[in-house]
Length: 504
Image (cartoon, rainbow, N blue to C red; front, side, top):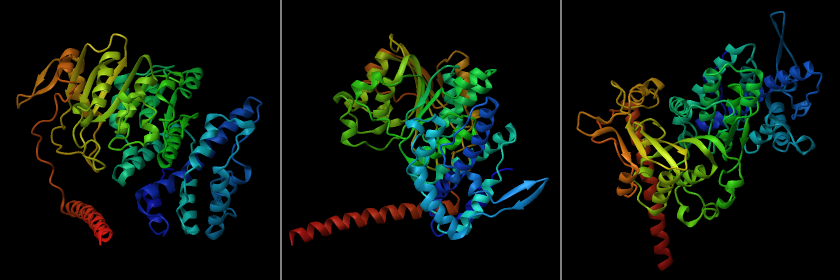
């Protein structure tokens, strides 16, 4: 049975405890995680029995899905309702028994397989927001109807879950955790991972790059049982925030990755000089957070020449240290990195040219990440190579014909990269557009150095007018801008009043 996300969201809108899309997502995903995890546990128990082995769950028996969440059984096509918790009893159980126990699980003998460790990590900072136990029971009942009888069931749930994740783009700041699937698929297709490659995303959000890599390897190889075992241990993700972490863990399971190596941590937890002792990877694919900054305790872990204020810059330095020799990387970065001329950015770009082969920069259309952000982004492709960079190709991916802007209802698709593929596979020749600007061109390392490491080349010049918003969307935009302005004015007035009071 397909998962009806809209029906679940409509139920939650009646609950006084859930506010906004981000909270609704967290509420849905913890229930969904436990249901999907239970389906996998039944599978793991069956496999263990076939091998005359015992499977011991990390979840206490009284907290097993069937012992508190299941409200009916089916026999001979007939549904039989069973005694179950609802209302205040359900809330009491979840808030005072289920959550505290899962947050404080003790690993068996101090250790546990990766697929068991994710349970505690997923619930460490997760919350139950619903205050109405009867409505919560309705949500649980809908999710309980999920079954994995065959691959089609998993494929359908995967598609539904992806649609569910896309709502992050319009869920305020939560949009930073989601990268459009067309972008992750394009990046992975260009990196071309192989079986036995160790693949990482050091700020994995909802895990899009890693899941795309898994599906790429699955569809491009005839996988033996041994290959699947390797594949299940090929991915590493790190995410410090709780919502994207549990979204990622759930997505891994839904997409067939049974042993998720997901670290609920800050990737900047090791001094620069000690990074060489950390695990290194054949492939790193990332869309690191940008526009933010890290505290002094993080920046002080880096040498002065790389001690950046911008989080994305720090991630670029981190990537260079975690990539294996001959390893391949692709990173989504804002325009500011390309034309930035501060010493830190110059030092990072010098490092890329000297010790890596920065062979390609793809400039993406401005609205790829809309409505979350309209910042123009780029994908940098580079390999760890002793000979460094000789030439770097720049390619500008223009908006598809007939589309003025991507957004909530129009997302970028893999087919929109077709002009790039044609250029890339047919010699990567220089292209001059109708306005006599370069759309694609190769630049030597010396030329980039002579530009003082300004990589702002083949960019968008004289862009077309922005798409005119519909009246309702325009009103919403004006309201947001008004609220932002009012908050700014209130803050300024408070500061003025404080100064006046101090001097009076």
